[in-house]
Image (cartoon, rainbow, N blue to C red; front, side, top):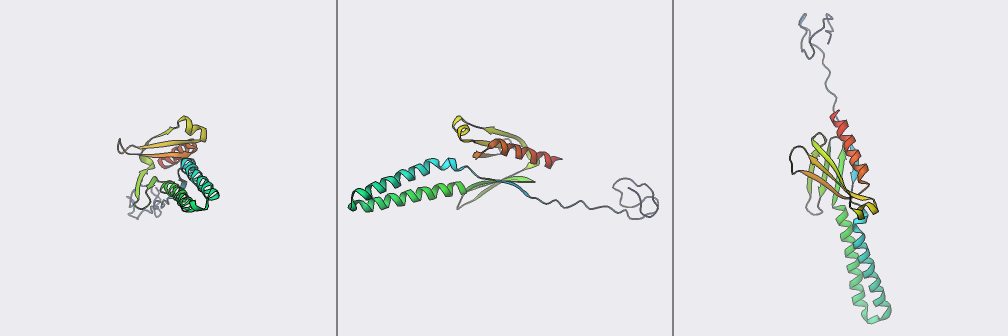
Length: 179
């Protein structure tokens, strides 16, 4: 770094010039801003069983209602139960999410009470993909991200669509963070 007054080549990181005593101008490090890279939620395929059950209950309610007017209380109860099953499936999906930012991976779980876990991208030890046969048929899988901070600390993204792309996005973000 050169002194602005006398032009002497000072040592890197020096606060004052050793020849003339002039204060060296040091640039402040730029402020890093964290930005979102991806928001990940479980796939709708995980709620297929719930939706199918609700559809069967609604069909049964329709049959009961069509065949006899005296069975309408049972038909109404079955329809209400079908709507409750659908609502619980939707709430279950919305209660879990993962956010990948330029600095960290954040897991949020729960609906009424929330749990939040974070892993700094620099602390990621491994990224693993697990896909069973049924998951492969529907393009789903699980991505497990382990932290180097602790052997038992990991974030498991279960039932996500296109797990290879998610794992590659995490790997790229980690490499950018380390660079």
